[in-house]
Image (tube, rainbow, N blue to C red):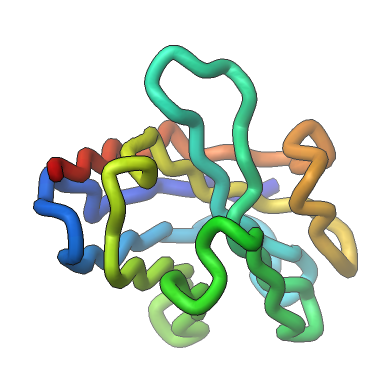
Length: 125
């Protein structure tokens, strides 16, 4: 199994940028696929926004495409989410998740095996 700890959430104005980090520990890093999810205030459903499959294939939700970038630093065992041109509708709790699989199904958050506790991002207009 893996342990995930997110950081980097903050309050910024619309148009600004943030970089979220997810420290990964535990099992063999390369065996997992990873994703970033978010839950808007008051929402239970988690929206999948960015994924990195075990082979490095990247995918994004339409809502963040061209604004957000997922990446990883293998040496630091850390997953990142670079978020640019932030909008008020990006306000949410952001979660890092991992699945022992070759790929992530962004639409199905229940597909993921492990979750961090989340980091809060607030965007003001």
